[in-house]
Length: 262
Image (tube, rainbow, N blue to C red; front, side):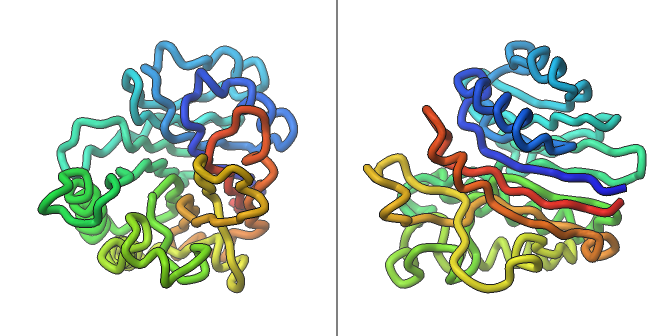
């Protein structure tokens, strides 16, 4: 059965409820994974989404920060959550489809502005978080699993507008890229987006600071879709809905899509 999945850092599910409704109406993915919901679960507008056919929800939230949610047309069961680096944040939730496929939805810490853990605690937390992802997947090798979310790291040189200029900018520093590669390798994860779109510049995030983000096009690919090796070949149709970055009062991220023949 073909399943279309999307991942999107929405930057406040309540503030951008209308944008989520638009995506669900116009694009109609079977599953939408949201990050940075910035709301307790009980205050998320879930009834609105249920009214659009997304009657199955697995979510973790907290007031004003973080928060992850999985909205699904298909039946799913809650498969728990993980608290890497002991932050006590709502940064992960998992859901299991009736087919046995588990979907992991992650929101990795952004890491602050200074790429030095000695002077920036947030950067250290980010590195610790990704390292603990690595350790978990080494001990719990994923099978029939999909990992999505805002991983807040652009790993490849063509995942950023300027590799040279961003080498010392948080999200593309060598140590972050190395940590993410180790986490990916530990689980045997396949980068589905790049398997489908192997060449060329590709972005899912554009800063709010750019007056004309579209013309400047100084983007980064921070949002990812990975699959365990046993189902990676079932993935196809990857795309980034760049147009959503230009919607009214947008998130600074664009949704990333992939299809899976499950």
